[in-house]
Length: 121
Image (cartoon, rainbow, N blue to C red; front, side):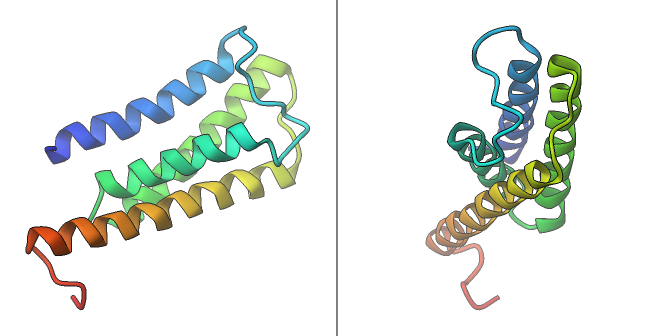
């Protein structure tokens, strides 16, 4: 896949998470439960997509996850009238970090198999 398509997919996924949070459907994560499995898995996937989209810029993936968690917090504020607890932010950022780490592992395997960059560089 091209790098541009991966970036559009990663940003589109984060925007879709925020949009679903604002939607008045039963797809919203519970704000009082920071260990909601669906939210943690969704942010882990977002972190993984961000890291795959920015293979040579780990700071880009981290900034994308910060923006995503901030966007979800603001979306929860507008959707539910509450922003949650500090533990929510910690759980969300930890889930995004796990996704970034998984994406880094996938990038490492992908780039080593492509021959573009060795594992030791």
